[in-house]
Length: 307
Image 1 (tube, rainbow, N blue to C red):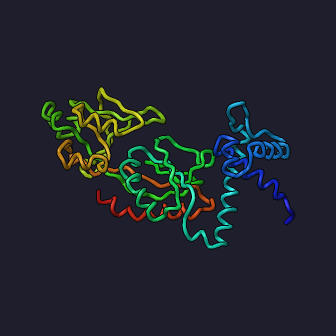
Image 2 (image 1 turned 180 degrees about the vertical axis):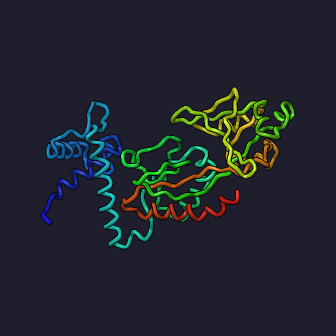
Image 3 (image 1 turned 90 degrees about the horizontal axis):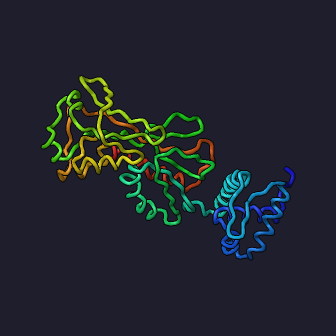
């Protein structure tokens, strides 16, 4: 194998990645222990070699060009693998370390994952965790995520999917609402009730309510004058304050059901669920910190199945 890089060029690539992450030549220089001028010269040499601009520079800031974004993602992965290969040879990789980037749905993040992160970091204190809470789909490569959890994940040959749980659905309402409007006994009764709607942020489409009637799955598009999008917790808050009925995941409202702030209705027609799935790229070298977090989460599947 012939030589493709000089030590100087590898150093320039490392400074480029530091500047891209920090969004500043000065900040990159502080991390690297060199001057901002040295960082600027190094990146200028790299741009000349590549024949492409990596940054758009102004007097106050820098930002990556489109070519720079692509080059940054590839260089960051390559440098990470080099660092981990060196650590493995030195025996350091026995201890997971480094940044872990996770994308989580808002409800699952608040109620399932975020409460566990202190316990995870107690086991692996050298891992830093960056959490992105959103219900939108992410681009793993372009945005630099290691893992994501999604509900109703679509099949994707580039992803490995591990189901975490089938989250049970319940229809709930505040006692005050039920005193005013009565308690529904059948699916037809829903037509006489205020049913809080949740809209998918990707399409704006209102999702159906799921039931089981005489052993068969039923899908109902309930009607109502309240709609929430992006965050299911908005529907829960409306229900707690007497706005109407709402179908949501049982794990979200477990405490409210225990203390009586919400009441489950249509229990004989329950039993439906939606899956939450852990996703990560297929075929990518997996750092120890990512493997450690996957194993950490999977140990909770049996516990979650009971709630």
